[in-house]
Image 1 (tube, rainbow, N blue to C red):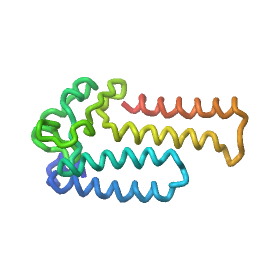
Image 2 (image 1 turned 135 degrees about the vertical axis):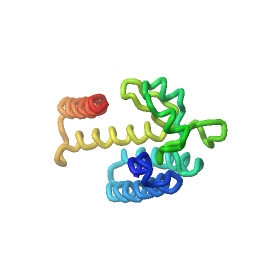
Image 3 (image 1 turned 90 degrees about the vertical axis):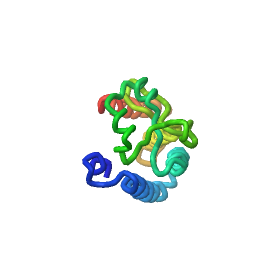
Length: 164
């Protein structure tokens, strides 16, 4: 829907909120099905914070231009000013709950993140750690478990840095 909005096929006023609703339903279902993983409660908290700021701002996640500059993300100023993006809107003086918007620069990843995004990331890392420690249902020796967690976290870090 975001690409279709960018190309002018959909109106951002309804495409953005509809896309977010579909994502919430699908992610919510996945979280519910995996509620036995305790780290996913951080994901739920992050998703809740992001949903709150999105609902408070008419279905769009506010993003700060200064944060985008600090994160070395280019080419979004005109898109945000013309509201051509179905997902984001420009953070300004009318923005509600601005501290929950995309106001945290992540220059190594060339991303702007929100507090909710950080909770979601922490929850995903926690799930990786939980999975590494369970290792087929048997308890691993402490050194082997620590090594496995370190390897999994290194792989997550590599994935995040290489995709930019």
